[in-house]
Image 1 (cartoon, helix red, strand yellow):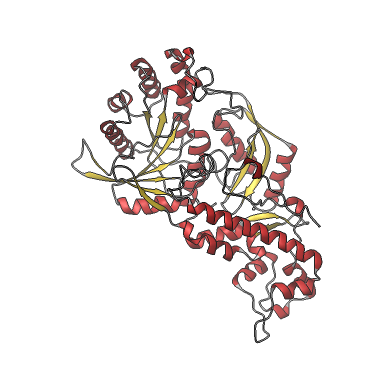
Image 2 (image 1 turned 30 degrees about the vertical axis):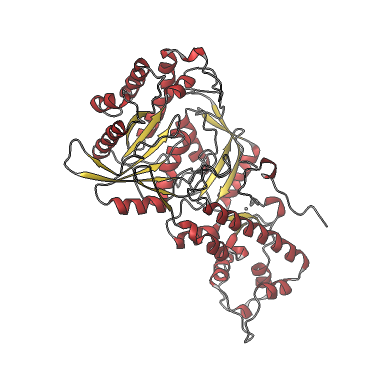
Length: 505
């Protein structure tokens, strides 16, 4: 069994204090393992993430910049050497004077449609096609990066003097994904990959240890796998498939794996279901939606909250909670559309009143979440207390075991890129999609290159269902603007940029 957790307010995991749960309606004890993303090292300079698998980031940085260096080196040598000289430099004979094609070379031959297996059999035109990538510098999408939170170094340029592992299922699969990463196009418009550069194997060597999750524990010794760290608003934002599968094996039949999928149903549950579940083959039975009264009040029209400043007196208003529950209901309905049961939990603070909790309970019940007996026992409690976390665990157990609906995806992979984007936009509440000329150009190119069968990973603000972070609640009838569409072929998805969403570039 399994479930995923999303949050509409502060990060919260209901199973962190549970090693084995004793069910109130079963004589059995239940094994539970949690899987989480690696905390971000940037915002806190490693304070939050340094002890949670932070070493993976260094390997990723090194592999990324190796590929970036290989791109620049290849462009330089192709600009200064003849076809034969380039071929001889790239594929020199061995000590006996013989040439043989390696596995990665055979991949390139197959891509080019060349069936010859001996280097000496290639004619002059085939030598040229084989050895010369002819990368168009204007199309290079791969950037150098740093693993330090230095805003002024987020955009690094080169040549001014005289370049995702969470979705992989195994080391072999990771090697294949690394080799498929597209770094740009040829001048004829064909994609150029890491394997075309011949560095897919080297990248795998640098990354091979990062495929192993970091095993940690909570203060009460619950096992937790911490692995991968993609941001939710610009990537798929989930813990790794490898960690989930290891956890499932450890808990065994009847056990539970709680895997992180936060940031709401628009840019996390949607990606979890349509991207991660497709590649993993795993199907959750339950989603825990974690809300806070303060966040719901903000969605109900409350003024902005500023860190370090007292809450505005306008927040002392139950009507704000009631209005903000429209946001919660949208999340519930969108999540249930995938065929999973939903449990709503409130991360309660001392300032939350019973009337405010009651408003959330009424909205959740009206949206057909868990039955009232369990829901009332949950929403009336403070979840930072261990005994009430166990209540939540029991509710999740019941929700998983009572799941009967078949799992459903939001869109079929064979649909066009535009149709998939529009299906996601409609789930947000949009009436349609507005594409920029750049986005239309990129969609046309990726479709021509054969990438239209990939799932979609929206890069969008996490503060609103729309592209406008100030549009709270559950907006409808808006046009969702797509300003650009970009590839992440190794990871296995296409990502549109929604509105003004930036990628730290």
